Image (cartoon, rainbow over the protein chains, first blue to last red):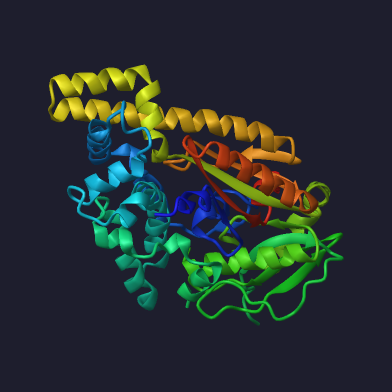
Length: 169
Length: 242
């Protein structure tokens, strides 16, 4: 497993055209003209409440605890946490090492991505051809205990900017 | 005689701002975008669609137009979803807020907004377990008496620890970036983020800014994950309402 996986992802830089990572700015910032009407944004508030990062559920706590227990502090210093976490998520170290190495980070990201996915769901609700894809992504986002196959699936976030463009209709 | 049509407002620019024709706005059948001059200002508007919701398509249309306008001069983007009853009320608002708007346009001229979000990262779990006394205490406890509750407590402490480390790192990078940016303002709380902050940045500082973020992220990858979004329209630097 090339350690480069980490290096290139220490910071994710989203160029313009990205919507989900700055949605709260479009909705909550920007100039307000008091006397004007503002369209109802029903649905948007819900997603904000529903957005959860990985460090906020019992499920995650248990996963952390298990990772801690698998950690041998004396001898395993070289071992990366994602490997440990990956082993847990894969159901006992079954996934290939290649997948496991990146999994811990992926999980964290998936949780963050979950914000965007939920937003997408509400934002696109009622738009038929968008909806199918969104539902699928939302389901994907919900399955926190990623299996080897979800981990292997290319992440939405790793798609180049053109990828997000192709999502729109 | 037709009733006055309500208009969607995308943003405010200087009256001298050249808005190239051919842009379309929000709505299922996007209406053409036009400008409406009032004194030294112009509002960028289109007919408001009959039924407007915050759909992805519309959010993108709003965002893209603000970005496009920003290429030819400063723009004060409106918050998504601003609809005025008619053109005349837009004109009146612009005239009454002309002074403030011009000052705000001056502030954002040649600048962009960069948004930085900081999140805890799991990559530092190993060092957290070694360094955090609370975590190692609970870890020992969980080993002595394993069980659901002990695991939850341990995991909780880990989550808290990761968040604390991320927040501390985020505070440091915030200080470093503030030195490069013209201004910064906290964004709305986003769950899962220990920091959400927007910077007003001169375009010529973009590379430097990126450099700081990347260096910091590399040096603190076991403590914090950074997500940088931009350049964006200057949503956070329009100075409130008019």
